[in-house]
Image 1: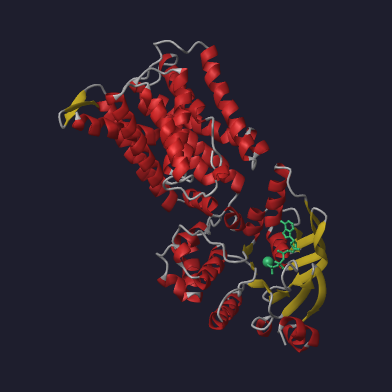
Image 2: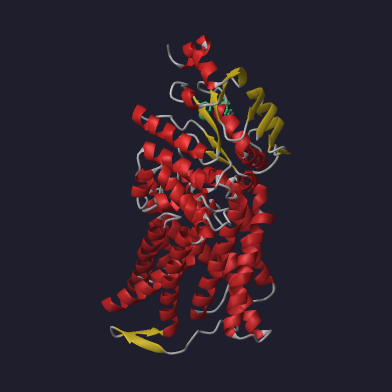
Length: 290
Length: 247
Ligand SMILES: Nc1ncnc2c1ncn2[C@@H]1O[C@H](COP(=O)(O)OP(=O)(O)OP(=O)(O)O)[C@@H](O)[C@H]1O
Ligand SMILES: [Mg+2]
């Protein structure tokens, strides 16, 4: 029992972290809380599905196209939708939420709600870890989570664009005075965040069926992890995911799965009451947070 | 090199810069002297183009109305409406007031971030130059900028501006809050930077440390130019003495 809690708790935490990372990254760089995040996540799932089932593309190619399209859409979202409300946090949230809900409800309207909508696992089969059976897909998810963290570290420390992201995130005006463009950077941060939503979707969706509600859940997860760990902080995301991930698995095992959502909300309320900026967050004021 | 004609800057209806004209010739060090809220920072933000960005953001959210009138020319070209990144490309860069650096990044990363627009292969040379002008930065290069002292952060802020390979370096109150010894060190650095062919426009509240090295100075009060002259002329001027030397 304990080992399975340990193993599944870890897997679950990585899933949450993978989901939350893109959302948090965008927020950390540009201050945009992208509430269309769940929409991008699900759109990526359906897009991959369509590329596989309508066009019959190879899986790897479908994945690549999906990630690229999600990134591009994120980029356009900034220029077409966010630019008009930029700087007014509440309007940013409302605009992106409307966009996300629009995407999700569009797929419901299209009738994408049946059991046939599943993505293939990268590889079938399972292994035993400390006597706990674990399928390959979940192992892949852990691997992808790790790879993404390493990629992000490299990207933000050793590439020109990544360094400019950190500049804008830390002191926008100084960054601008050095020739970095804030709108361009914000648009790229939305592109990167959305592309990461696509990566998460392709890795995680094969564990179940693609359904509209997943889109809303994903947004809630991203917000919850961010609030608990502190948005825009990578260690914060990891800790927030571990707390929620284990809390979920434990309640799922000892209480009932229905309690999971209660645990989520209780954790959010608790953290907001004790340390509003999140366990690792830097922002002091509640208003600045989603 | 830089020519400003009849510049007016309004924040809403408040006049921050009033009909200001000034010129900066290539290879010179020019000073802008003025006490608190004289309009030094506003002037620097206007020349660097930061004000264009501030205006854009205020307009978007329906905030403060910022108006810039008049003309700014750089190398004969009108840049009044040019955005900051384009001005950096042309060689104008501002090291901002109170040395706002990137606190969570190391000194070296701060300098690297500043090379964002550079496409030429001589970035390494710029690092060497910055480390020769400010040897202390080399010792600190692995330290987070947020953990450096105020004086060290000031050097870093100027170093970052230098990493863009400027032709006109704007410095907003670089001497602010530094000990006299540190001020002298920075004065030496400013001269070294000029030796390298960089033209300098620098603001200051107290004229004392700066006057000996400037080729020309402009004294402003409440956004209005009240006096201009060579460094020596200003040093000998009784009004300047009274107002800015605290005599
Ligand atoms: N964003 C703004 N909105 C409204 N007024 C402003 C704004 N920025 C500056 N001002 C006003 O413009 C005037 C000039 O300010 P500025 O910051 O340029 O002065 P300064 O000479 O740099 O002063 P200090 O020595 O204190 O740095 C001041 O009266 C100030 O209140
Ligand atoms: Mg000032």
